[in-house]
Length: 297
Image (tube, rainbow, N blue to C red; front, side):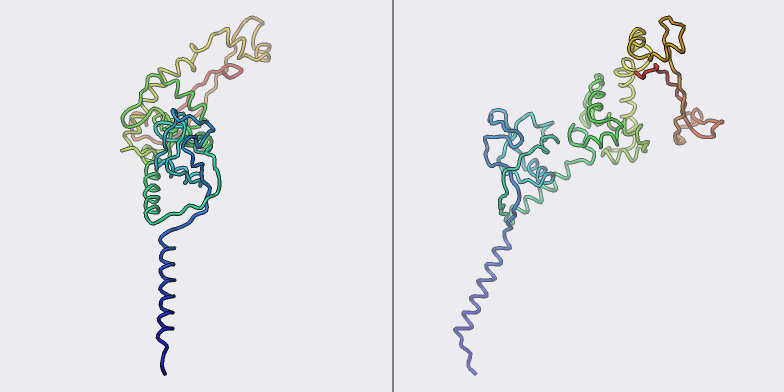
């Protein structure tokens, strides 16, 4: 039986063309995703169009926007300088990036490799607890970790005028570590791992530095008898009921003294261990005495 060689050759050519076509398709990927405007004369966050105050976004910044918002930022896109904090796009700016339209983005092998490298770089630089960027964490995250919302955290930070940023970490991070310590009662080793510090001794030094700074810059002006005038307490922080029940009609200040227990773990420091042990409660504790006005200041 004879086989028509022309037909066989034609079939082979068709199969070869199909394979080449499939191979070309495999070398590139088409994604239909939202993208920002391709214009280099406008900001991708706000409608400002002033080229003198805008900066070109780096590959890492463009990748972070894609990771957080699933919005593709074309190369060469620019953003106003006031949307940056320490060289990085702030959290509020990333959340405000405006999407323009759905577009087909074609990625070849080189683009995919570059994108993966940018993913690795972005994830490497993005700390799990990034307090350096004021807007990198949600407001609820601030409350959970430090006990303060973002605005109150920033207000307390502004009071620490005697502390300076060091080569290794900022004042924001040191304050966050101290507040996390007293809020969550985590061990120094756990805090060192969470904030990517060298050792647990670094946490001890940081807590000591922040405590000293708070005593100098905050406590003297916001806590204690000297931070408020007697006339201010009578006018603003004393209830009418307290005045009528507990005074004889004269301008007398009513103060409330309240003691409580703060239970703590057994310390490895022998002196502190003995000072905090209560023979009455049979536990280690600290018993502070808090003195306040009838309307808390």
